[in-house]
Every structure is written in structure tokens, then in C-alpha cells.
Length: 113
Length: 112
Image (cartoon, rainbow over all chains, first blue to last red; front, side, top):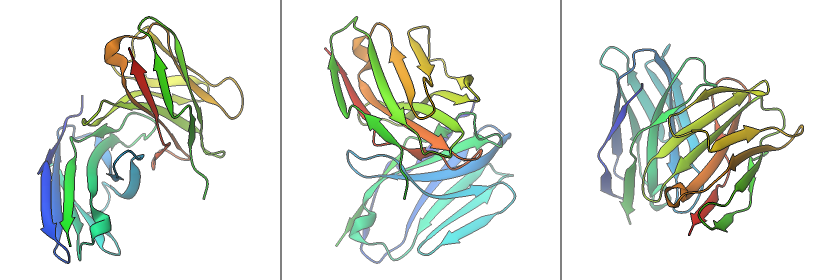
């Protein structure tokens, strides 16, 4: 089955700096890579996703990159703000999304004002 | 904006008891999922459901678990005989198409 590794487990950045979270996956059949933000005690919230037919996607301060050959993908947050502080999970799933999405172990991001 | 809802928000039960966790997916969504998250750990897939049948289930989803869509709006997860290790946050999710799963607020299950 799919195995998703995520690094780092914790990340502290100064407000305004950039944050990068990296994930690797094992199953070459995976074609869908969502990122979720989870604030303490809240639901995971989909913030951005990427499919295997593109290498990069951007939405305001958030961008994701995908390298299918190397089986890794990354989340980039620029101009970080205190409200970006949360746990971020990457995930990977097959092209048939009604099948399971496998989550990474999470990165706790702390943005220091 | 429509959201997935779940009830109850917190359920306390004794070991061996049956619990039913309820979810109302987003109304035009066709795919439904249950995940669980043990405190401080990652989100784990339990089961996916489409067209009134299970699409896929994980090794966690054993015979103690079952899912049902009893009517046009609800989606339930039943645990027949709860164990201490079933204590976790259970999330329901739904998707309109085959991607973009949206999560509910979760039910915290505490088994004593």
C-alpha cells in the first residue's frame, strides 16, 4: 500500500518568512496530492491540491510542487502570518479518488510574530 | 458554503458497547468516507462508500465496523463492541467528484 513520509515534523519560522514542507510517497500509481491544514481541535481543511498532470500549482501565498519521477511533493507558504500556525498534512491517493487517501504524519508549523 | 456535519461532537461509551456516529455529507456529493485520528497522530483511512456500497476499506475496518446510508442524507459508522483502542476522533468526509474530500468537524469517541 501507499506510504507517505513527511518532513519536518515541526517547523518554526518568523512572521514574513517562507515555510517549506516536504513529502515523499511510495506508490507510483498515486496521482492526486492534497494538502490539509488542521488547527487545534478542528477538522482537516483542504487548502490546495495537485494532480499528476501538472508540476506546480499556486494559490496566493501557497504553492505546491510535484516531482513524479522522484515521488516527492512540497508545500511552500510565503510571507507567513501567525494564522498560518497549524498542523499541515500532505496526502496521496490514486486517480480514482473514491479510494483512500493516505496521509503523512503531519508538520506542526509555528509562525512567530 | 455547505459543510459536512457530524453528531455527536463527543461520545463517551463503555467498553463493549455499540456506538453509532452520524454524518450528513454535503448534499450533492456522491462519495463518502470515514477516517479516524488518534490524539496527536495522523489521519487514518477507514472506509470509502459510493453508490450504496463500500468501495474500499482499510485493515482497521474489521468486522466490528459497519457503514450505512439509511436515507438520502445521513451516513453512519457503527462500532459494534467498542474497545479502549477505538478511542479517537472520527472524521466523516465527502466529495462531489473523485477528488477534493471535505471533512466534517469530527466526533471524539472516548471508550472507558
